[in-house]
Image 1 (cartoon, one colour):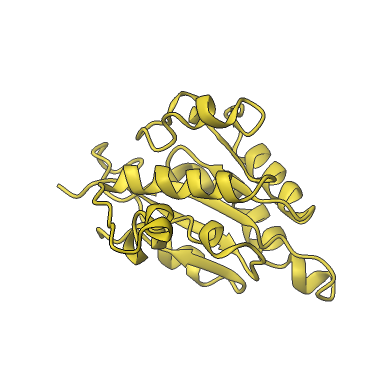
Image 2 (cartoon, rainbow, N blue to C red; image 1 turned 90 degrees about the vertical axis):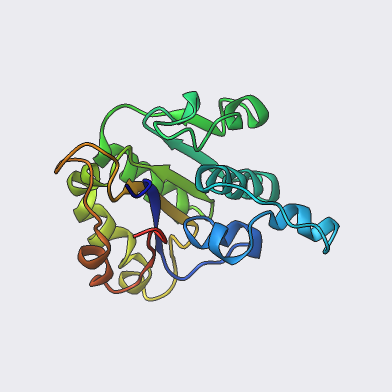
Length: 193
């Protein structure tokens, strides 16, 4: 059985430090343990998928004071334990739970990123992204275009576990093809599918 993973969904363009840009699937496929490698180029950390996602979010929180991680149950470590220890390390102001309202999560994330800050919003499962689909496709993806390139929400990442999480037909879709058709969205799909 394939493991569940995250599909990162970002609005482009991005104006973040390189390490913060590596949130999502590309973080573990490109160079896991980048923070450690910066100090010692010979050292490479081996880690599993959820540890790599956790490490990528930790790097973003360390390198960007404005970065926040939020979503359903992220303060407790998340459904797949990807945010374990982040609340204790960075505090409840930067890693916090939200109500079970995907539209609210997306709206807050878009607004926060539009202010020039870094938002990492987690939807508990990829299925749950559909109530927020309009905001992601029509607001986040087109924000820069609609403002005549005066504004953007390029420091925005949506994380959503997708693909074969072991719950039958629900909670398992891979939305890559659906979201890839939207201009200005940069997708980092699950490397295990």
